[in-house]
Structures are given as structure tokens and as C-alpha cells.
Length: 542
Image 1 (cartoon, rainbow, N blue to C red):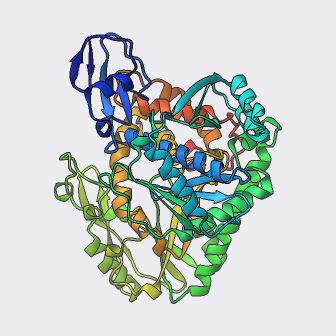
Image 2: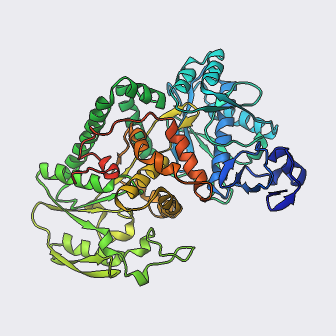
Image 3: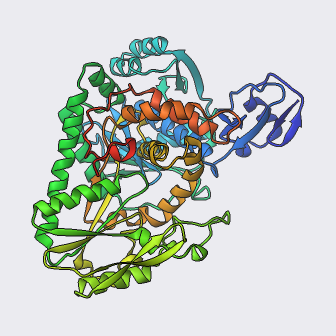
């Protein structure tokens, strides 16, 4: 016997998709399935005793299958209409995918519309998506036979035993993760011109099946373009480029170049603040989890001192409400991600008094007592400037009493612009998650499974209280390292591998292991003690 989507059935060797077609309407067939806490596509052939759960758009794993499927359809349609163009999926922005023509030149005015119409035709035809699982060498040969030497070279650098290629009757495309079995499962998407390329939008697990509302992200695109220029200098745009650089002994060069790039950005930001001082006496630093905010604030303080300013830091953690007053989340647990967990009215009044030259007694949050106690007294002197660092620092609730002209806002996040290949961008969110896993292991006595259990709550807080304010920043700092995954692999691999089938986070651990399997390990001993990377792997001088 097996249990399929809550229904007991006689054991059969038919794939799940065939069984699902017999028992439900096409529109109700899931995007992927979970069996023994592992995610599969619907080509899976059940084993006797399996309990099979359907995954839809309301789950993150179901969303990933939908996203991978629509990206596959996009790449197929784009190649059919414009086979001479090199079009790549650059990265995810606000749960949409930014796509770019390599030379930045559109062949026609209705470029986006033509691809969109072709995608719609493919979806309405409800075509089967063929999956071919090959060894690494076999996949290389397939690409060489298609005349795609660059793709073959990329595949050759991956530390993976199996490569999945997908096709709709023609060109085979390597896609990570799970795809649906047919194109007809896609019911909503949009494709529009955006900046130097296109923006592919699709529903996600946060929008109840609807297309998300577009959000301005042009500032992030500009920073991503800076990363691309830096990649040009190093000759690194794909994971394969990175792996070859490591194999060629260029590790130290990568480290020194990356730190030099960050150092230049610190200098630029510090000089901008100096020019704006004393009109701007408040520096606000925000960003999502594991962006490197703490080390960033410390390094910025050094650069401000070099520029003749005397920065002081106020911690938002000291303004948490008493434990008994912290709001509860939807699961009845204290929600420390919400801005409502902070006494922002008190914080805002203290900022106003300090900027007016008054003396203020700052609070100190005693985590043992679960409440605030009196802390140090502070009064701003000549040349002093306030730095506030925290996930909510750009939220207007924290500084509504301060004039906009008195604030300098910084948004920090890793915006790594790296591709596995044209159809598979590297996820900055995965980079942050792996940073968080490694940092929690190093400094918070929490294993990888514990961090994964918290991550959904962390992401909810980011979506509600951090991402909406990113475009309000005066500057965006990209805290990524092109070699970041290579360093984190040495710390995270064994810990993720410990998460077994009995864990609800098994599939997520396996997904992250698959990501890391694409990257060559790298010796991190020469990463400087002042590097933002040290905030996560240890050995920081701050």
C-alpha cells in the first residue's frame, strides 16, 4: 500500500504523475512531492509503504518547482525565437528573475512581447517536459554535440555525480532542482522590459497564487552592475570561472582583490558622510540577516575617524521591549523579527534629544532579566556622529522625529552576481542562509538544523520589515564575496550532511548540499581578520 495525497492506494510501480492523472483534475496536480522528507518531481516511482505529500505554490518547495519550470520555459522560448542571442538569468530580485541579453542590445522593440507570446504557446500546449539524468561526462558530450562548448566546459567543473537535463522535444537545458512534468502547470507569469534586460515575474508562496506587485529595485541593479564590472576585471562570471581560478592557485589574488573592492566602497561612503556632516549626524545601517552589518559598522567607524569624525554606536538591541510585552507570531512564539518588538518611540525620542545636544541616559537590555535597565549617559560632542545598526534601522518608525536631511541611510546585503550557467543564477539568499548556519555553529551553539528551523521566521521578518525600505537608502553596499560559497563549504558541508531523513529539514539540507557541490573548496586561512567574511567563519579582529 501507498498513501498518495491523503488517499490509500494499492502499491504500484507507476510514476506519481500517472497516478495523479487518474485521481484528480489537471489543475489540482501538485508541482512536486515530498516523500520521507525528501523532495522529488512527479516522475518518482513510489515504493511500497510510501506516504506521498503534494507540494503546491503555497509551500517554498512547490514555489521552487514552479519557478524552475517557468525559467526553463523562458529559456526554451527565448532560444527558439532568438537562437543567435546569449540570454542569461542574472539573479532573483523580489521573488522575480532579472534576465539579460549578454551585449545589452535588444534585437527588436517587441523583444519581450515575442518571447512572452512563445512562452504562452508552450504553456497552453501543455507539453511534456522530458528529463534526462546523465553522468557529468555524458552531459558534457551532449552539450558538445549541440555545439555549446562553453556549457560543456561549465559542466566539467562541477563536483556532481549526476546532471539533470530537461527538454521539450529539442534543445536540452541543465536546470537545478525539481521541475514539473508538463508545461501546463504554469498558469500565471509576466515578462516585461526592465533596465538592460527583462523581468520575469511569477506567483510565489507569499502572494496566494497571484503575481507579486512590482517593487522598484533600480538601485540594487546598479550595485549588481558594479559587481559585474568587478567580475570583468577578475574574469569571473560563472561558478566554473571561479573553480578554475581556485584550481590555478589564484586564491590569494581573489581575496586581496575582494578586500580592495570593499575598502574602496568604505572610503567612498565615509567621504560622502563627511561632506554631509554636520547636517547629517545620524547614520542608519540596515539589511537582512547575515549581511555583515556588525563588521560593516565597525569598519565604517574606522573610515569615519580617518575622515576626522568621531562616531558613536547605539544598539537597537538595547531598546527591545520587556519580554512580557514582545508580540507573538502566528505560532504563538515571541516575534523578535517585528519592529513592534522594539520600543521605537523611546528610541526615536532619544535620537532627537541627542541631535539637539541634550544629555540622554541610554538603556541597556539585560537578556537574563528580560528587560531594560539604565545604561550609560551620552551627549554628542563636536565632530561626533551617531551610528545605528540593526535590521530595522531604515524603518521610519525608528527615526520619524528626525528630519530626512539629518539622516544618511545605508542598506547592506550580499548581491552576488554569479551564475552556475545561463539558466541557473546563484542565489544571494542561499549565501545568507549558509552564512547564518556557519555563524550560528561558530558563535551561538546552534546546529544547522536549528538554524534551518528558524529561517522561515527570519525571512518573514525580512519581507515585512526590511526589504520594503531598501530603495530609501542613500547607498547600497554589496557585502558578497565571489568566493563566499567556497569558504562556507568547508564549515557547512559536514553539518548539513548530519541532517537525516527523519528531519523535516532534510530536503532543505540536501538542496544546500547540492548548491555547495558545484563549488570547489578554498583555503580561507589568508582571509584577513578585518574581513566581513570573518564575521561568519570566526577569527575577526572586531
